[in-house]
Structure formats: C-alpha cells, structure tokens
Image (cartoon, rainbow, N blue to C red):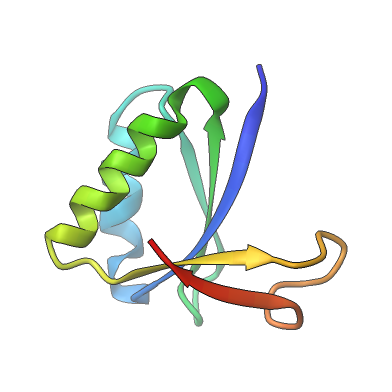
Amino acid sequence: MDTIKRYYRVDRREIFFIQSIIEGYDGLATMSTVDPNRGLIRLIIPTDAETDVLDILQDLKISGILMEAVVREDSTTTLGHEEKIITL
C-alpha cells in the first residue's frame, strides 16, 4: 500500500483531539507527534484516502482548530531547520 506523509503544526493542546478524530476512522490514517512542544504532527495516509483525510482536516479547520501544513524542503533534514509553512 502506497502512503503519503504530511506534517502539520497545530496547537499542542489539540494534539490528542486531532489524533482521536483521525484514528477514529479505522484505517484512514495514522498520526504521530513529531515534536509535542512545537505541536508538530505527522500523518501517514494511504494514497487512496488522501482526499478523505484532507476533507476531515478542512472540517477541523472550519471548526476552529488552527493547523498549518509544514512542507519539508529536504527530507534528510530535521524539522525546524528546513521547513516552510503553508496554509491549508
């Protein structure tokens, strides 16, 4: 199964809530916390579920959850050194 990794910066107080929502959809995606102090999370999404996950993230944003996508410029660097913020 092919997957996509996406990184987001969120309010760290919302990490558990977001994880509960994402992982509540069995098999849709898995979420892990990359840096809890900075609110950095990683979603591993099956390619065929990407649209569904993006729809859920958009709904969370509409509900007031602040979320910024973090695009890693170089996958060999650590987050924080080579990151660019984009909005959903």
